[in-house]
Length: 351
Image 1 (cartoon, rainbow, N blue to C red):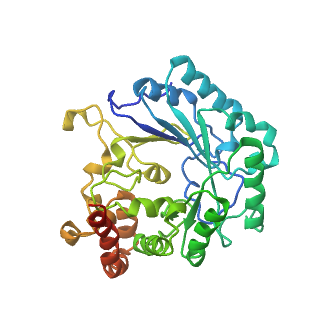
Image 2: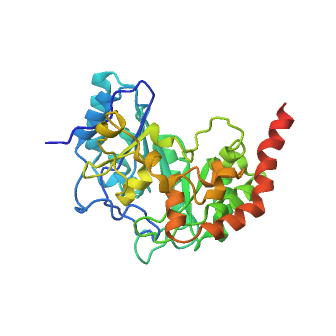
């Protein structure tokens, strides 16, 4: 019998991250989702998804990643769409996939990807960290072939995510230039310390990249730089890197374990737990109640960069666990004036 989800019904819109499988047809060296279940072949029972949607019928988006979600047959997703339509729920389905299975057999996937509820984001980065096999690199030429086929069969080029690590940081901006040539949007994400990625990438170093994107006039083609421009102004952004993100996000792993953060779900850490006796609620978001995740250090509480450096509790944990707080802080202090100028300089101009 499936365990009962423990959130109480809430009128706020939710987003649900599902990882149907840990299986993947790529061999990327930085993958965070390589230890999210003990049984690598298990597939997430759809009843967990249905129970969640019945509890939160105004869920806006079901974000599907993995592993690679195309390692599960399309019928799995058609059944979810059928459930949504029978219940008249409005949720969209957003895939994050390397699209390799689509590339090999587009006829298997094109009807699903053309469905009005479905959107697709893919992934690419320069360097040798993203691999089709242990020895075959996912090159720009291959990526163009996949994108061209998707454009032909589905009607648009998908945006893509680039994961920045110490090994490929020198080519980070090249990913954004590629997005410009493709006329799509790139999202430069810094690597967390999860799964095969044993060491996090410094948050301050990715902000150096965002500043470079901004100065080069490439902001229209990079998602996170757009968020940085307003990060300190108190303006609502779509960036998940804010301290209350886990109030409106839930994540289901293949085995059905349940989290308020996909990144902590990758670690199988901080699952949602019953604390009615202590907090008087049916559920709580454990990340906001863990004092070790409040900030990287006490001095952060009075720093103008607090919202940036401590916005993501997974990042706080990673940098603490790897003794990287001071290296991060040193770089962030050196670029803080630029982040402040980008935020508040633009605000003054707009006024």
